Image 1: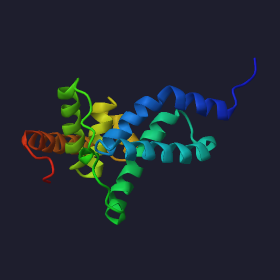
Image 2: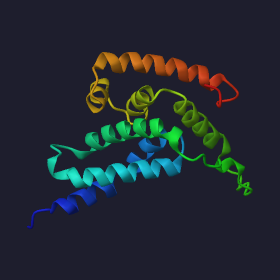
Image 3: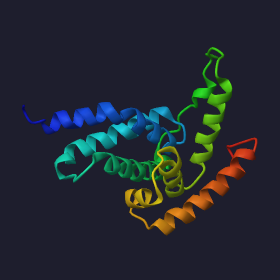
Image 4: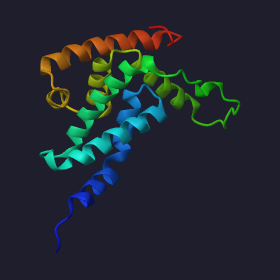
Length: 169
């Protein structure tokens, strides 16, 4: 039996985990699917180049890289050209699971109003179901920091989700 080549191993990792990683990126990007796809692609490209230096499982490394890269993207966002929101498109679409989609959209937008680190903690803790210790390790902070940012983030999300207009901060 031939050994698995590093390129094949990375391709298998991407094929196996890309859906879950895209979900994480989507939430880190506050519901902007295009930005999430770009974030994941950028991170996977950087990880691919460094894959030989990563010890152990790639997934925690990729998640930490996505959390850090998303924070950097939000900082750089003020320098980007403003894009027209997709909500202004003429195509109304077809009815279906609107309630679920609207709830998910409200949560994603509310996450976008939180500071990047708090958002990363909440996404990793609740959407990726990581423990406090794993979240702390992924973000390079203490478990106490994860606990305090989780409490503040959940409280702020509760406030935001009762507000009728999530464009306020």
